[in-house]
Length: 354
Image (cartoon, rainbow, N blue to C red; front, side):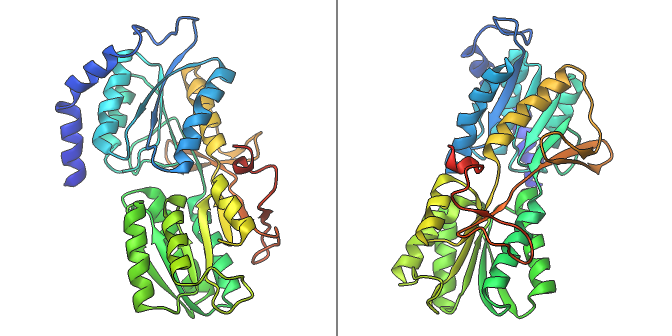
């Protein structure tokens, strides 16, 4: 009911806002920029995390390389804003749209509207629950949860308590990471107790719930943060409790994060956290734009390996997803559960080149 209500509000009450915002852009309405380049609408999902701020910086860089013009908006993690921003793009006459809907159910009517207007859509980072887009550019989010599970399960010797600071469960990403982590733990490390804490990707909520969990279970030995949004609060709590000690110390709490931002890599080198999964902010920008450009030009793709080291899979009938590599990053680059990892200072990591 909530999603339907938001969609209704976005499609009816925010059209006036869209027209106003459109007037603030240039006067192009045919989808062609002043130099004859294609005009693409790119909605930034939020700007309150280092990961998404990095993505925002990469978009204009790759747009210049591809010779496309971009119109940008920022929905600030609000589905109503995204719906409104899409109306703005339509009024500006864009030829394609790149978006990262954080509420992956409520975006369906907007996708249908764009499809009816023959405006191709590429989603990056997230995949819509229903409806089709030209391509989803994403990494395997279930693999994120499995890698975190295997890291913590191995380091804890298969026993103990861990906290999982979940993202938003209205997002396919939050659900994928949560379900895969839980399933892996139950199957491979059944003697580890997992406390799942829903945070809606909010740092203050994550910090509050972690603090409460430590109060009730001071013998927590592992933390899985589903995104770097929880990084600062987690480190502060560990410091306050005197738990920022080397892995050789019995009091050490093993921490694995998810994003691969520069701060996480620095923290791994300093021994403040133990691992992260590097989510490719740079490649989301690059291939999001490349695929929407390809859609405008009438190109098509099939499931299978790509020339850029990823694999396109068919998620459901009519929906393809390019699953980009997202390696586990550790202090020493040693394998975990037989799977390779990258050392924190590896030059191939985008976080070391941001």
